Length: 184
Image 1 (cartoon, rainbow, N blue to C red):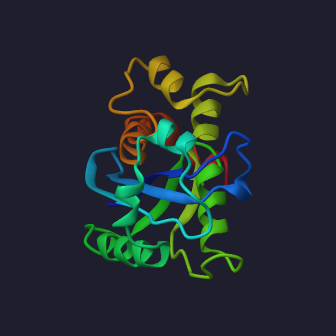
Image 2: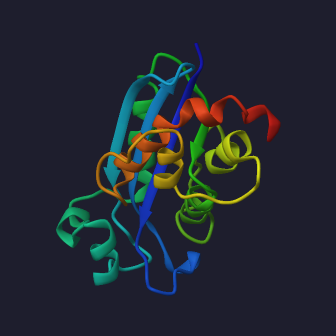
């Protein structure tokens, strides 16, 4: 049986919201099987090295500096994450995020300008695009909470918590996974 990952990141941010001014500070992952049943979860804070946690970031994510002070830097988190993935019943074949932000941020943080480490992740697919194509068919964009409401689900947990957001993405798995091949 195939295994898939639903991944969400939270990052340092400033009001300008430019990607280069951001750095991942939390990784949340939910592994699901082909039917969308959760088979594992992973969460870790990530200690930023290239940006600072601002009051604005804390107000959005509720992640404190003290939580990040005891966190690992990205290379160690990625090693720990790889070890966790090895405990899953099968090697994940794809990973999904709600939009393209998460893949771009991970590639920036892991890239040569920052940590220069390999991500070692399966193929990424944009769950938001797949959901919209399958459920809306009009190309309009919807946020995660709105998407959940459209299919009769409620957002569970804290908004801007990486693990809670990943759990909510996983709740939509059946609504975007059926149309994934159309994007390839």
